[in-house]
Length: 264
Image 1 (tube, rainbow, N blue to C red):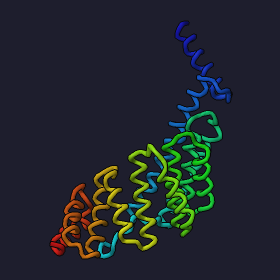
Image 2 (image 1 turned 30 degrees about the vertical axis):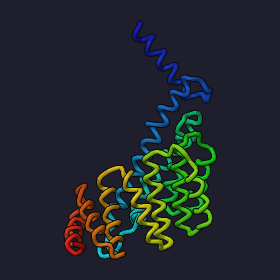
Image 3 (image 1 turned 180 degrees about the horizontal axis):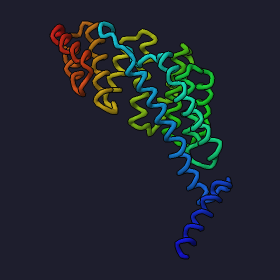
Image 4 (image 1 turned 90 degrees about the vertical axis):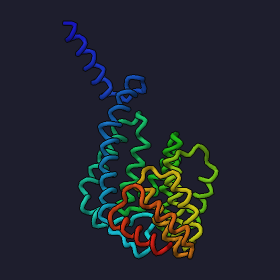
């Protein structure tokens, strides 16, 4: 009997949380948990899987200076339309079904990422602006601003990009993860404007915040290429050596060894 009573209480709380938008502790706890694990988390995993496929499908040309960001291949995005549509549906559910949860703004950010991948730039712009304007989470706002900056660069809207850079330069408590994305995006900005010194300076700062050895290796390779193009062979050699760390792909490793020899 006690077991049944306990189960009844749990069911009562569960049903009440499901059917009500009252801003109570129980409801917030339920909606936070459900929005996170049943919607936001699953959507985020699907988006990251598509991003990884874009990276894997990209054939890098090591005879040319590598781009700061891997170009988004529309064919790969189209092949993963069903996965992105599912991520969009999950993100929308986190917003529509769990409005009192703390994952609403994060889910809007995911919608912006999906729009960005699917080249729906205006929608992505609106989503990132919404998150920046409405979120109380400083780290999430920074994420949105950095994504907004990348989009402005894509669109060659340099005045808006400059305003965003200036705004971010005055922000405090930027996380290491966001600092990495910010400096990498700044490198993209300078790459877009054919400013060699700017790219090198931004990447040199980004590499200090690289989240893993693979990212660090790729950035060091780009720095080596750019130093070599500037005729700074000693620096190029050092960065090619650094690029060998982190178990880089075979082709990049081969070029590192070859170019290390050439730059000595």
